[in-house]
Amino acid sequence: MKYFIDTANMDEIREINEWGVLAGVTTNPSLVAKEKGISFHDRLVEICELVGGPVSGEVISLEADGMIEEGRELAKLHEHIIVKIPMTEEGMKAVKVLSGEGIKTNVTLVFNTVQALTAARAGATYVSPFIGRLDDIGLTGLDLIGDIKHIFTVHGIDTEIIAASIRNESHIHGSAMAGADIATIPYKVLKKLTQHPLTDKGIDKFLEDWNSIKDQ
Ligand code: E4P
Image (cartoon, rainbow, N blue to C red):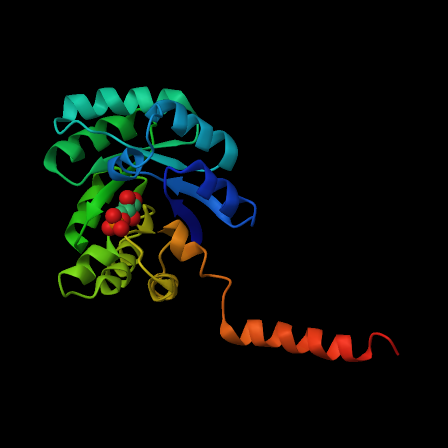
């Protein structure tokens, strides 16, 4: 499973990119709205040039024609752009047209297996099932990742699964175990991925032992 970062913030992307673990970036209108005074298109290009992997930028239109027009504009910005499209009937029409033109798409706001299968059949390059938002309504979001993986495997579908709406390290463990191709992870959760109390304790002990003999 690869790691994407789920943000439009350059400082966060730069910092995590230095670890060498970032394969791509996802944004959405809520994340872009947090970045005051930026041009959405300029920011997408900036991210593409830094990360050198797939970068999802979402359309705003709700009608297929508008999504297609926005998707074509986004795709022209950079070769790494992935056009993010909501899981609706209009969205499926847009995915069909854009994928037919060789433009890659990420179908977002996926909350069950049939939405994922439908997006894949329309030609989506990626589907984004939202784990955390399912947990928020009392369901087990991680079950969806395994179920989509099973269906895609049984039916020979190569659409990639992006585990989205990740809230904690258990979501990352569970997504990897369930066979997600990618997890798109918020900065705050990524910052926890190197941490374990026994690692800190081990470093302290190694240094203590080293310091006890260094002057011998
Ligand atoms: C991913 O593509 C989505 O934008 C994101 O993971 C949504 O996460 P949230 O439910 O924390 O807003």
